[in-house]
Length: 288
Ligand code: NDP
Image 1 (cartoon, rainbow, N blue to C red):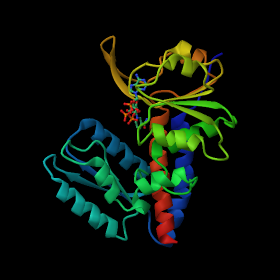
Image 2: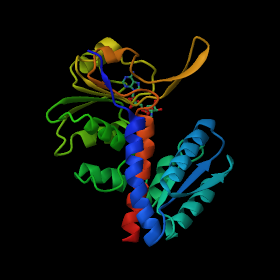
Image 3: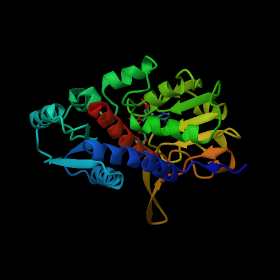
């Protein structure tokens, strides 16, 4: 079997097209949605991510503002900025780029953002809503992007065995919760660094989501014949003297899977599209 590719770039572009029309309607009747991105320090990868988010805003017509805080800013500086943005009626979405320098309490900062402006979907209220079965709020971007990719295949997930490798607050755990929602109805196993016999868990799974951050850790022959594979990992590696991005799933898994996401061009672009979706949603609820 050679897997079909779930093309995150193409799917993301389709989502952006839909958003464009909502945004232009909003812009003509009141104002365009407004996303504020806050970045602290000089982490090069974070600057690339922020630039990509700004570019997406521009493509769609979303207004974006960026605050660059120096590496040596303190917690108080960031908290006062968030308070100001929370109160600003012209701001719909607030995103504080992760990772923050080590002297910051990242979870505490997330909790400072008003839940209805938390376009990353990481505030405990937004994460908690998913537990109660509500998926109409600010959903965390990578997990909701994963769901959109699975849905785009047209395959039913009902009753299927899904394995989520990784239990992080921002990817693995919410992805597992979304897969078990009523109406989606997958049967979910969550694996982590203490899980035993990952190989058997993988071999038994119809849906495999790898969100670990270890290049090629899921061996291609572990993938069940006909499985759907979502590779969330983004790992920079040197191959034959060239720097490349690879996922958590070994190359060649498409010989076994029925559907698979590429790295790059899979979950990454979808994460940005979901951020744009949350920003438009936040603006719609504020402007209506
Ligand atoms: P974290 O480091 O927060 O979580 C990694 C998870 O992997 C943990 O739960 C950890 O287990 C688990 N793990 C580590 N080693 C193993 C192992 N040997 N076997 C099984 N599980 C293991 O990472 P994130 O969730 O933030 O990100 C995961 C990956 O996804 C990274 O490569 C990141 O770059 C990428 N990513 C991609 C995004 C995109 O847009 N495409 C967005 C966000 C992340 P334990 O809990 O026991 O430590």
